[in-house]
Amino acid sequence: MTPTFTPTDLKRISAHLGMTEEDFKKKWLYKERSSGDWMNKKQPCQFLDTKTNMCDIYEVRPADCAGFPHLQKKLKDFVHIHKQNVEYCPATHKMVEKMKQWETGELIITAVEKDKALARSKRKEDMSMNSGPVTY
Image (tube, rainbow, N blue to C red):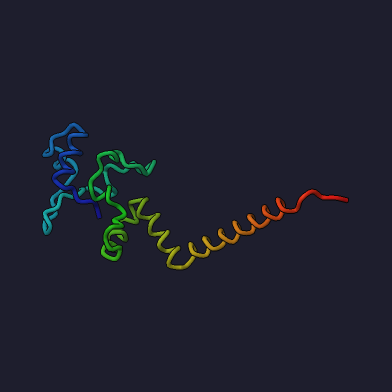
């Protein structure tokens, strides 16, 4: 799965790359038949540097990428997209791993353990501050 490129995305990104919109579309995109959306020809995305996992056009990235992880929308509506992106997108992979941890309770357990450790540390600190001078 790739991001869709809106007309605004096409204008912004092609200008950033010093290309015409037509040249940009010919080189990198195809028009999806059923929806008419412009999408990447290549997966992973041609702008993803696979050595650094960084986006080469981050400052002008498509609205789909800028809106990720689509938290304003219902997560269940994007599950199929996340499943498809896990293989290629480091951000999606990390989010799905976090979701798995929440589902299994690992993150909740970790948060509770951290809270308990912090409380123990605070009690020790309070005890040492309130103990006063030691007399023999």
